[in-house]
Image (cartoon, rainbow, N blue to C red):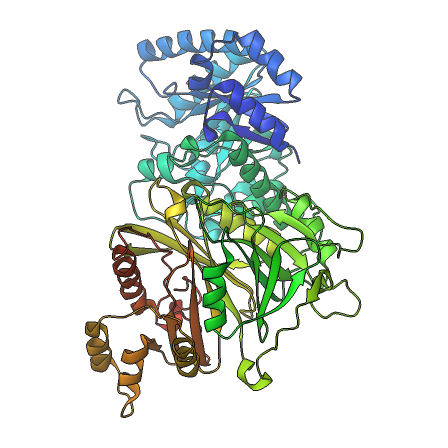
Length: 626
């Protein structure tokens, strides 16, 4: 199906918005009136610019407060309409959006509304224009799609149809059965379809609409269900996005347009109107790659954690450190000294790396060029919204190239096999630019098949942070997306790598014995822990000594502790027992405060990544790790 986007959904000047929409692959645009009024281009020039960019102008919007008015007020509305229709003729747009009235002059009279909309449609028809009537969720007398359709049907004018807007419909109707009436509308009378998702918030619907809409798949609405009803009714027009969002209005139009188009591709895949390469979900984490200007500090931490430098890349300054199935690459090549050590890339185990990369490219993920020597393994990589490089690779699969073939052994002795039991990457925490938090969740779901959990706000000593986990169903891959709740310098946020072990106490003791430091936890935490749980003699004292945090639910227990931060990265040691699926939610504020205190002693403030997960089993699969 054709895709379109309202210019109000993007930031910048009208020309910037049109360029971004075209480059993202949209077929058309809705011209928002304010964008046209603020443009220095004449309507004819805008029409020509759209044609040059391969865009059609699918809708001009909005026209407000024109129906169910006293005759004197309606005469003024018709006068405005004549000017708008002449402008649309010059612009080359043939459909205008008319919103249900919020005017204090409007009366509650459907017959009058139908009669006046019919007269408006007659005036529009003389100019070759159609009128798409939409029910605003806060309309004075008409606020539902079925009520708007009854008025349109009563008017009976061929140039008058309805516009269905997913926000106005789904913000009012919670029961899927309420949408069945869409099927009663003839497809040729649905003149336009506007799509927007939104988080499920309890607030004034006007403020909800004006500030919190988002692209399909980024909120809580069942857009696929609504779209199926519209398609069954026979609608054949474009799928158009109309999204009012404070974040999008401040973000670069180019990436926002790509995010928007990706959301429509995924939505079309859901309703089987577009075929994308099949999803190839990752099966594990092959490696995490750290980029650093100085390998010594992070190498010291890895050594104290029991990792061994086992190999070095044949042609690049990259070392492979390994313990069990946990692998860390330390890259001293393109490091940025301003950031210090950072988590720059993730290798994802894939049963079909080429197919995974093909889907990523089809969903507009930037394919990263890779400098390869003739003998290098053919690794495919794409960029996530935050710039993290995602490699699709295989480890130890006889039918697939092994990325480790690019490395040569350095001859250092590996730890005894028994010491490595259970060691693997449990989860990764990636800091997102503040304006790409929702985009990142959709990207990881659509491209990688990771299931997003609910977003969680976490109280940090220096502000409020948001966190959201995306995971495979079996937990083999867990990525935590973290962001500040306001536009801040995202480089101030730390990232972390959580390492799973079968014995966190032994791992913590070994780390300290090897010269490593663990994050100290205040005694007040352990006093509270003693009040909440009963422990065998000496166990709580061990946790206090080592800085181990603890949680328990009906399914199991969770123990974890943290190293100090190197650059922007710290490590977490975790032990999951039983079927514990959380991440120690009560401990997140304590950990954050302890990290601030530790960093504060060096004269700086670090807004570390905040991840949290609820303790109760009912919500354990709907929040984020910490």
